[in-house]
Figure 1 (cartoon, rainbow, N blue to C red):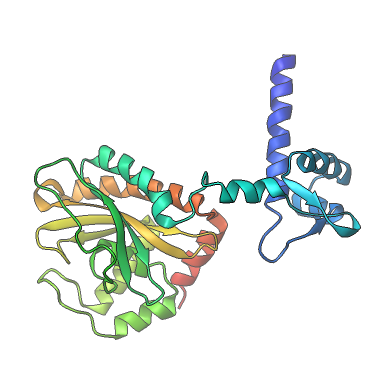
Figure 2 (figure 1 turned 180 degrees about the vertical axis):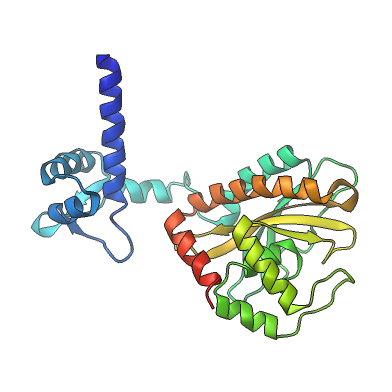
Length: 272
């Protein structure tokens, strides 16, 4: 019983230390003990005790006037290479798992400042007949394909309206160019978390994609799984969708995303 009690106490201390670390952000570099106590709901004596231990381990450092800031260990870990520095770095191990899990080609796409997207990398299916990306680094117009729709659906509502009001290229007969239909799809994508493409951009290829968010909660890219129509019935695509949503969120967390920040951005994407 004593061992269980000690273990629970240790876990509680970790939880409380994490709560303290979460109080620091880009706008709040330094905080005093009273500030941290109010923000976490902990007593000042508990916060003080935790800060001493965290300071000894480099998680926080003391600044002027008994205030505290993020410590050197956090920066060292961030720059050591142990924490992925880019969307591609964060996504590649997850893509391999997605490929093995689904049997189809998995890829990571990045949203460009121009409002277009590019394919960063892929992990190809082992099937002889498979989806293979060849246009790495070449800009692709939104909202073409599942990756494009997954990105555009989570951009601010004004940006969505701007794209829908512009020229929507008919790449293939299945390409959706009706802005009303696309707007309805975007709402559904935000609701369930993933987008579908029924050979809307590449002949004979269906794809499923889910967004990846960065530390600010903004959509930064997406993960996709693609394969030949013959192996991608709707039921299988929807099953893949939930797996891709979970995989994409694991990448988002590596990039520093939080559920609260993601939800704020998603709400703005659906605001009118």
